[in-house]
Image (tube, rainbow, N blue to C red; front, side, top):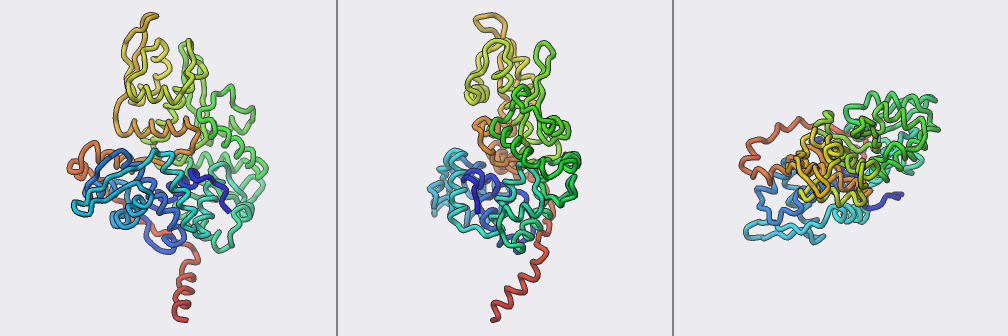
Amino acid sequence: MTTLNDAQITAKCVEISKCLVDTKSGFVDFDLRNSCGIGDAARLAVSIRLAGEIDEETLAGISAALKLDFRLVRSEILSTYEGLGWASVNKKNRIITEHIPPTEDIISQLGRLWREQEPTPVDEATVNGLQFLSKSPFEKTALLSELGVAQQKFDAFLDYGVQAHYLGQFTSKDQKETIWTPLYWAGKEEQVRKFLEKQSEKEFPRLASLTRSFRDYPGTPEEKVPNDPLVDAGISYGYFPSIAITDRRQGKHEYVFASTPQFEVDPKKDIFEKARLIVACIRHGQHHAEVSPILYPRSILNCMRHNSMKPHPYADVQYALLKLHGMVTLEAGANRYGAAVKVKWIDTPENNLAADIADELLRGEEPVVRSKEELEAKKVFVKGMVNYSSEQRRIRAADDIHAKNEFNRLLESVAGVRR
């Protein structure tokens, strides 16, 4: 049934596993075991990559920050890494040596593993369903038909998603029961749902096409945005995030994105929002530079992070938003033409995480979800295990996630065993 590529599968698995953090066990552990396992493995991999050698206490601290069960990390995830050649464990001193590949290889190899591990029908419905819904809402019966699963499995997919808040339902303009994913609009669910409720089912394919376009080229400049009333309305309601940059003549240039999974209600703390700011500033240099346009966006990002950008007279305008959000400082400098501005990167775990996501966006890839838990994991390395452990945040109470027919399934399982 699945038509997603390996990287897309892993990205969806990460979204699912993060939404089910701190939930009580039940049939959800059976129905979504493959997706949650792959998602957890991906989250840990991107967090410990380039760490070199890790002792068990540090691994336990990282696992706690990511809200992963350390027993499962030791018994399952490390075994997966060893099988992939990503880690080796010294049996005597319990030191783990990681050999984890770049992020693009992490997500492609784990997506392939998801296929090989025979996902359950609910696994497949959830991964594929989230991919469909990340582009546009779906009328309920149309989504059931598109996913091609039995009604009982579809019901489980919907029950888990609604309770874990990665799925929602509303009535469309033409009075049809419709499913969407509020996960992509945290803090804006109400206004985005109002926008969607104004649309009829015939508008959903257009929304999907526009979303694909903005996902293929994140930070599309306004002059290249399709001339479609849905775009203007979508930007106004927050369905399509946009960043506006003011040039030296006080002209505003808008850069439009497809929405991404949101786990932070406060935009100031949202890693994806910071990543979009970085991409928008670089796109501004590509499309509206005063002197010479940027030809290689990822190279500019790399130079920015390593403080090897040469002073430029337009830098104070182009990167003003990054200064405002504490990602860079702007210092007076000079180049061969005269006065210029030197951009200096502020090296913090949060800024580096945002830059990692920005790089994935500029590659045109679906980024792996990283938010506050992944940021906390990075702080284990920065602060050291002892200092970090004193700052551990309070773990919230677990939510009970279950399917409506779960009790009947349990009775059927018990009856089957007795027979």
